[in-house]
Image (cartoon, rainbow, N blue to C red; front, side, top):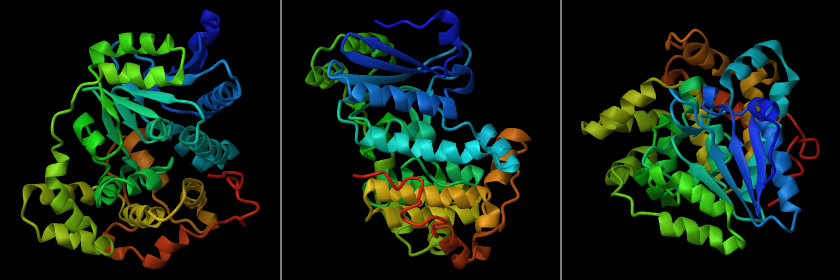
Length: 370
């Protein structure tokens, strides 16, 4: 086992350890629900590249550190306060963060060795990005998965368009627009998780994984610990979700929900009324385009979108700065969306988000290949 010095380990955003033939990555910002910053992204990327090239390493386990008095989380997403501060200041580290984060997401999806994500507690946004590409996505009864970006004036990135587009039926559109949180039975039914284990068994499970000597042992260990999830409540709403979220555009989705008196439809409608109208429209377009894209192509599209979210002079008209202000800075939860209603969203503005500011050769993710 490799150990870091205590002072260095305490400050490190990611603890990188090798246990026998298995690499262990521990997200180490529990006070911030293990939110990702640029340093964390770089730590994860370097460790994964090193272990991919090391023939002695047969697999990798990802987990999140915990802190007494704080909710359990693998990772609650990116550091949105940094996004707000850097976006206002024009800090180039913001562009570097998204480019390097999406490169990391691609690396995980295409990783040549088994990568096991222990998705205990909160797994949202960037946390989904570093776990959805795992060979084994392990959930517990405490897991809550979501892509809630439309609530802060963004869109489901980190490959979210790609993996949400691959959920059954129109669940991807529903999850992208609403940011609805999924517990384990729903997440597994949506294809966003693989196995359910009891949280009380997670420590022992991790210890067993770290003693594995061959790649196939990792799956066998998880399979022995897994239990059958209860039926998915969300799947009971599949007919309704498919009908409403297959509508041709965002105004038609809302009109369909408004015409349905069922409790689920009205609850979904209320969720959507709180979100950024513009970024819901962008997110709907994202998921639908992503259905016919390879991952690398989809991540390049997301990078284009994110450029426009934080570079208004480049043609963007995003709600990100305002959404983060309302949720995490002033915390008044009263965002002033622009435009304020779905009916005022100009389809041409939505399409502007999908125009790349780069040529194919100069795109910051030009090197990604599937």
